[in-house]
Length: 538
Image 1 (cartoon, rainbow, N blue to C red):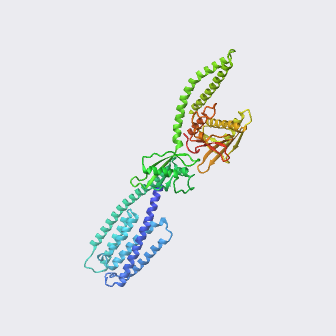
Image 2: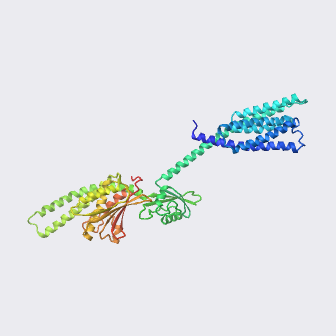
Image 3: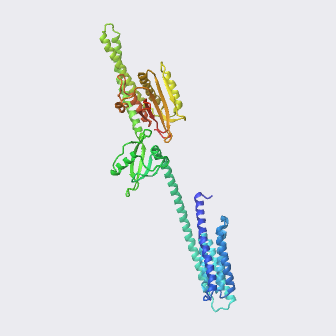
């Protein structure tokens, strides 16, 4: 059974044979016309048709029409199963007709018999097997027979059997040489074809690998014009360029490229193209270092790079804080217990009772800090789940509202289609509980109404899920916005300053980003931008 490569090689060989046969057909038509015209208009060539003029002329005319018919055959549909048979028949007929022309002109002595060298060579090239030897044998026998017939029918003083033998030897030598060369050529063709197919397969594999890489790859000219890119690069830049056909890099990336071109040791800082795009780490390299005309740009999602470090930090921090919290909680418990015993004493003064209240208040605050720190240690379970966000939020809202004695309002505005995210379910609940509790508390302080809004969105170009928690609180002062995610920063005397910090740490561990914004109607909004659910989080 032929493989695909063998079939392809045979088809190429067949096409090549057709081209050779067509060229050979033009040669035969031109040769027959020359023989005919030379006989008619050049009487000086007295040896043409000297033995039998009528036979020579009839053979030339037939040869012309036969060759013209074969050429016209090229305009008809070719039948693969009959092509080799046509090559065989035409070659043998050529040999016979040329021997008849040679006979009618005086035989081998005139040199006309050497015209059969071309059809035998063409046949050897077309078949590339022992059929070439058969053609040589037919030509040799025909030449000997024509000489024998001339010697029988004519009275000649000399015979030319030696010349006929030498012609036959030449025909066999040419046939064998062409068979050998044809075999080598065919082997080289097969090898070249296989190598070409291997290269094509390797090129296709490389293309698929590059297209499926998570790293974005862009080829640009020295001016920053985009020449080529893979799918990941298109996703990174799709929010900043014309859809499907971008020609120029974003301004931030061009600036980084210029800095690198001026100093090839320059290390780019993480780039954020817009609010909805992830932070990207860019690196640069010349496609051809000796020319420096084209530059390769590699774009990596910075959240992936920082996620690993974040996970290691959380695990180490969790282990450290768990041990510290355990050591702190024991003396704290003793202090709190001693304060309670003193409060039960009947001889304690009102001023001392105030001091005991301070001890109890700050003991509870320290205990709250310890609980929050222990929450970091629980982030060691980093296994992400594929969560249907809309359904999960419905369950979360039901559970959260049920935990409050007083009436609270949570308005859900969900995206029209289901959104999938990759996040640890318990840790996502921890993040949203913290944000919603903050929203409820600040809404009550500002409006005496416990109302928050939860919105879901999906950026269709990049398939990035967005979750927003909005409240009616007074908001955060401009000077404090950059500090709100820092540990132990708080605007309340009773706050620990770890809630938003823990939320940020958890989000970054899953390549998500949390940020603070003001809505168009000036409400407080915490926005979580999740990673694309198709990419691997860990």
